[in-house]
Length: 366
Image 1 (cartoon, rainbow, N blue to C red):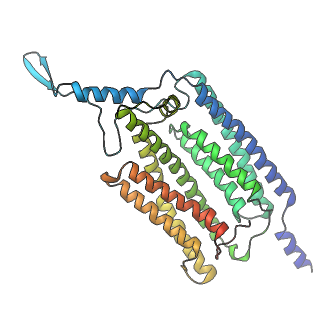
Image 2: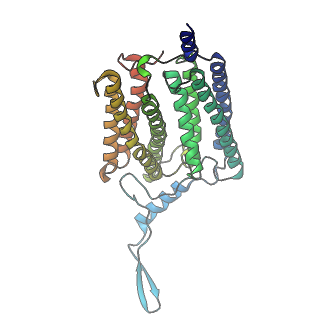
Image 3: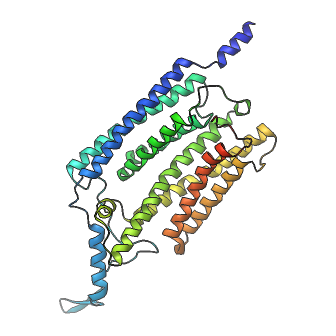
């Protein structure tokens, strides 16, 4: 009787910690909202007088390409030196030799101040958010990703952590902040409403140390894939903008004010490629780890369960993207479409399979 009671106490949910976790998650959402408005202020009140670099570069390049002489003859003492004019052209397929934009702040002190406030609020929200995830884990003394609610709050924490880590490494990606925080708020909103599941113990099949290895790497991969997907989407907008300018078109005022502040399309393309390429080996490991866990839990490494199938489809999609991106003829928009399709496969593997498809991985808790 005493042993049974002790076992029950060991597996019981600590409701106090569970409530603290919920409070911290809602508090993080409130601070993220403040950060969201600070990012908006950075974009709105940053100087517009320093944009126009892309237009200037492409216009200058077009003029030189049309009217400039093939070579310039220059006298150097008694020797004639031939100098080729510097013409702005496509550096490679899908890329142009144009400068990066000044960033969301527009290159002035007021916009930069709002941006620094936004980053500070993001750091504060991240710490509160992380506290909520840790409290959720402590309430049941296990990894905090046993159902879709827990996966969502952990996934968004890691996504913000990836963003802040890149900033700490002196990567100029503050332009990503507004898009990141917007989707984090949407993710948490869905988590606390549609996906919310009371703190509880795991189903027996999930009682394994592989839960810490397999699912944690899946969350990290998803967060990094998300950052790459945002860069890819912005690349498509910036590339269309540059193409329109290159062809003599006149983009709208809003598009000019917004897109001119982003990095050049070639920079966004390289950023997304490097992000996806860096995390792809970890996604490969995630699938292998899942197969090893499946053999331990169900006696077979692979059974074409819907979750396994879509994890493999996602792997194939990203492999095709990386192969295509490494081939000169597929740089640019074609490869970008493949990257977005691959991330769409990852999203369906998580949301679609968990909610709409039944299988051995049906632990959504919805």
